[in-house]
Length: 286
Ligand code: CAA
Image (cartoon, rainbow, N blue to C red):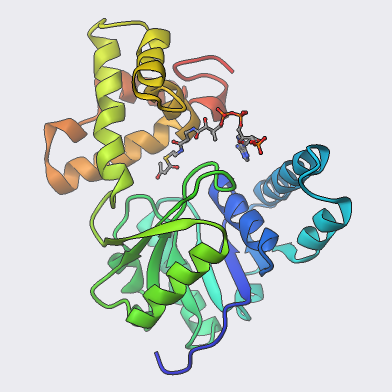
């Protein structure tokens, strides 16, 4: 990368749970943020979620009303991809579909200056497959955040064989500027967290299927026995059962290991629309 520039303007693609979280954290840390979402309802819901989170901080005395207004003043929503053209870095958090991601990157590659860094928040798709759709493999990096983004300190920074040292350093610096504590990881399916977390979550479902203990007791075991903030079944409800199923299938395809094979109960729940918290029903009712 020859023409390095300071990162001040962030474009965020997608205003779902992850996109809105990333947009909130970036705007809260002084960045100008434009968040693009094609679906108006999702956009409004995501912006509403940010307002609600900031309101909660105001009510707890952690943020002033003026501070909240400043953050909201740095944040805007759009339905036009072209509005991301002025970004120094674009972070995508759209649906986990490679064709859709590649299509968006192909268009943005034309719209953005050559020194704009592209980053993907994918939890499971290889970063290099997305970078292939652009002419800026050296300025393409993975930035994997965790849910809830405002609370979780980790960002996995994923480098492909092509990611330049400068882009990697910029991604690490940016993560730290958001108050996060990043790690570096190679471009391997599941990166670090999902590679370890997914077999563990699937094992909890297998334990439930085999009648080892109740939903409540499996979760209690890991909370009280291992100090986890949430038990595995509650965590799956929180992440979304469809997302866990999706990630496990990708890992199964890649590694072929039985530990990654989704248990029957998980597939059944997803096909019945029991997706966890977002659908009102998962291992628990909401
Ligand atoms: N958005 C923003 N803030 C939230 C929040 C949300 N959805 N949920 C909770 N919080 C905040 C609360 O406001 C509260 O803030 P303060 O401390 O400032 O008051 C704080 O989190 C604690 O909340 P609670 O007391 O209500 O609940 P808790 O102590 O149980 O914490 C939690 C909630 C942070 C979610 C905690 O349970 C936790 O860490 N759970 C594990 C989450 C996890 O493992 N996430 C990773 C999932 S994997 C992933 O994301 C990647 C992937 O690819 C699948």
